[in-house]
Image: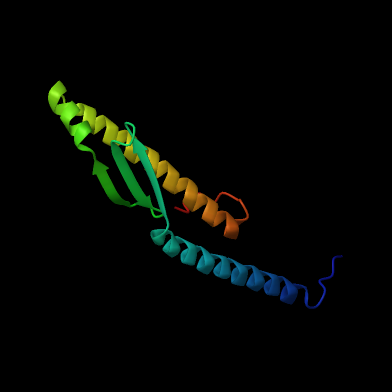
Amino acid sequence: MVRKLKGANASKGGNQQDIIRQAQAMQQEMLKIQDGLKDKFVETSVAGGGITVKANGQKQLVDLSISLDVLKDAVEEGDTSIVSDLIINAVNEILEKAEEMAEKEMEVVTGGVSIPGLF
């Protein structure tokens, strides 16, 4: 026959409440970090600096500049896909950098544990 100890359920409930409080604190910290990412920036350039893209940590593009040389080359070649391809490359690169920055910021809270769907 197995006997239950008095207070066994109470301590179990206390542990659950502690876990919930810790999870809520972690969630609040993560929200602060995510909000702060809007004020942190990464920048990249392609085509020898001919196209420069800047994004914030929330993966929003905040600046794009295209030099006249890049535009002139496209006009001379009669091919606008040159500019399009360069822009796509720059945007993909900057979004990757923004993702890496956001992950590094979140590691402070998550201890390096990857949480799917966090971003």
